[in-house]
Amino acid sequence: MPTTDRTVQLRKGVLELAILAVLGREECYSIEIIERLDAFPALTATPGTVYPLLARLDKAGLVATRWVEAGGGPPRKYYRLTRDGRASLAEGATAWAALSSEMTEILGEGLS
Amino acid sequence: MPTTDRTVQLRKGVLELAILAVLGREECYSIEIIERLDAFPALTATPGTVYPLLARLDKAGLVATRWVEAGGGPPRKYYRLTRDGRASLAEGATAWAALSSEMTEILGEGLS
DNA sequence: CCCAGGTTCCTTGTAGTGCAAGGATCCATG
DNA sequence: CATGGATCCTTGCACTACAAGGAACCTGGG
Image (cartoon, rainbow over all chains, first blue to last red; front, side, top):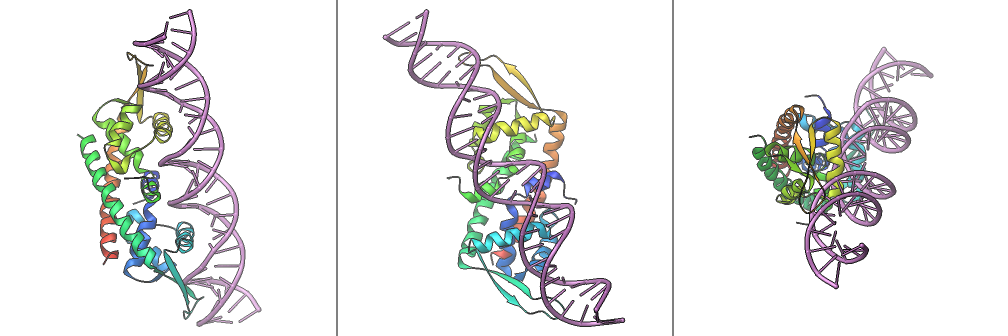
């Protein structure tokens, strides 16, 4: 699915939550995160989107990082959730559930 | 539910679709739209958000407007969906369904 | 007659987000 | 040593949500 203008707008603010979810499962470095997201067509993101977002999460204390040497390339910066990050993920999942359920309802009414 | 920073971000781009859905059910004027949205806590919007959004929809040809005299106040500007607006609502509903299903999946994986 | 208040419309300025484009660094290989 | 791949990051633009505030219209009381 191409990145239409609509999906661009729909995804605003959602990517942060998606990235927290990816990191909730496993510690990852940036390009790994991008690849995991790429498995979900509606959540595909480019480095230009992901890097600033990770920097924001780091600054906010939701993720922590460590450098890991990698054979055949520069070291990789691994990101993992902090305690605050896990709490934020849980909160976000709740907020998402509410939004999702209300959108389903209003869309059901409107499409009649 | 207060308008936390998270819900603000989650809603980006979603309000347009919600408004199209409201208008899909019935022709409304601005304040009526705001009231309908207010019935959904995660979708509450202020006039400062809704007016520019309606202007964008009008400019894009997704809605059409007409003035209706109202006793006890200034005339009301009623908005209704155009054919393009209905098509956009249908497209948006599809995009939303995809996003929603993928978010549910990735959140399920991440919250383990 | 007029002004106070409710209803409706709209604009402006700020902060936050997604993204394309491009640049910098490190390592292995030829 | 130069080329290429992998990894990291920054900059600038367009778009969105929102708070704050302003303008026009009508009714009803003094």
